[in-house]
Amino acid sequence: MKKIEILGTGCPKCKQLAANAEQAATELGIEYQLEKVTDINDIMQSGVMMTPGIPVDGEVKASGKVLGADDIKKLLA
Image (spheres, rainbow, N blue to C red):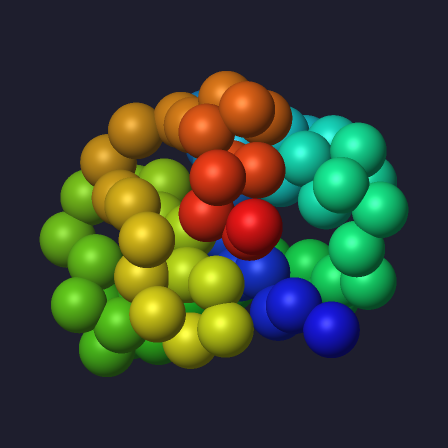
């Protein structure tokens, strides 16, 4: 099972990234756990200075931009 985290304070970009991540995982047919991390201290501990960020299995794959579902599929594959 993949652990996908969305790092952000709940802004529209963060919500869009979460939706895109769910779409990508669903389309790939993989088991996943989506966790939204909104605490700024937890976000900074991940090394993300610009939100939204998207760690997969604990490794930050992107930050500061909203990836589309196709881009996220590449990170999950």
